Figure 1 (tube, helix red, strand yellow):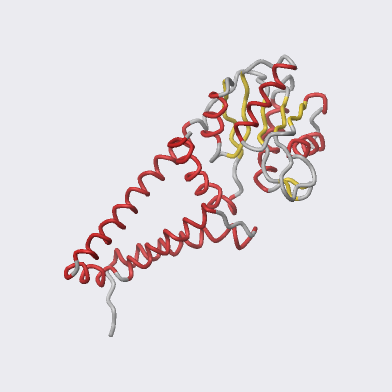
Figure 2 (tube, rainbow, N blue to C red):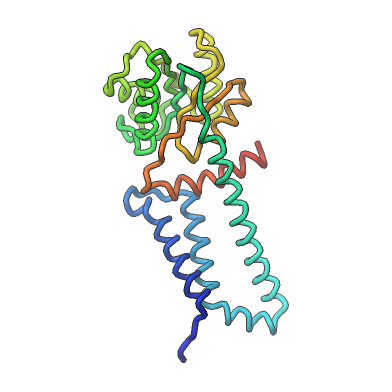
Length: 255
């Protein structure tokens, strides 16, 4: 039997298939599969199934109250999820256009190091911090991040080594090498800053998707934070952005 699809079914299924490909790119190119792009793939699969079998579901719903309730619940959750994702994305972008005070010291947040080589997103942070420090030659820098599993050096030392290799004077860079999460990054960096007379106002370098949560966390520990977003490499953006939507949701709801 030939199945006829309406234009909206074709458009939605193709859009969902394109979305699935976008969420697969980090895994195909970098073997990154986390809760973010995993959830994204699951949502795209649900959308494809709904689009292709919508008429079947509608027909079944006419004869079963249970099917009708499930169908309406799934559609409502998808719509609510889309609206919430848009709201969280707006939050992520809301602090991206700040201007730090002249020569404000900068905190560079760590991210994964593969052995002793910065990951793609950490390298982007390093490049952004290097550009900031060259533009503000009086500014000091705190490289922040401890040593995680599969890392042969601390994230802070990887940041400092890369900045020095890019021409930044080592004396301008302090390292905080014991933190294991964003709040610790700021708590320990603030203590280091006070010990070295750097005050409490900082430019904060982290990925563009992460700046809202980072600055919000910084303010909770007593830092006046100004975002200096690093551009996330396109080929890992879907996994990073989708994971941050979930992390930001947890952070705002649970603290």
